[in-house]
Image (cartoon, rainbow, N blue to C red; front, side, top):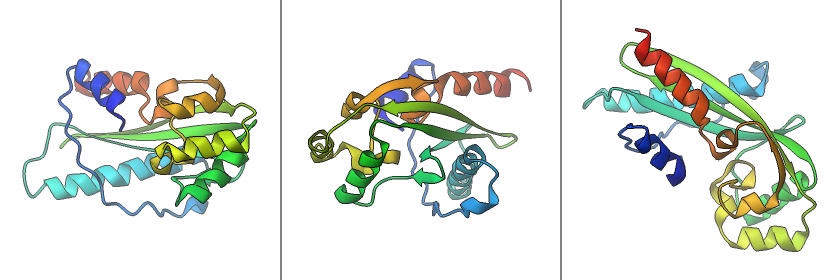
Length: 186
């Protein structure tokens, strides 16, 4: 989760503590009918990993997990392995539309809610020099698709069709809606 999203959640009155999941993200993609279900399960398994670790201590009132992937056609772009892989990813996305999926899992001791959102993103016509300049910033190496919309990667984007926060990694509108339903409709 980005610092910007953590600040927004805190503003909503949610006390946030980060606990990374050690879940190995190598799910068999071929068993899923669509990318949304795939990324939703990634988020679910991350939350289950954290939940299992916390059972030894104190279970918090709510665990939120998310995962984001970038897709174009039959290709899933996760985080780049190195700067050359980032260059390959960003070059293939240049001047094209792709879809970003973010899956979310909300878990309490009594209830679990899973959902996903998708947003279309179109990169502009970017040069190799622009891509390498961006890669040298270090920003792309820990981001799905090799870019962060909230940072310098936003300069690569010509158009977004959908929820900006889905591209950031946490669809805030849907999250707020699901939290309201989860806690107000017991």
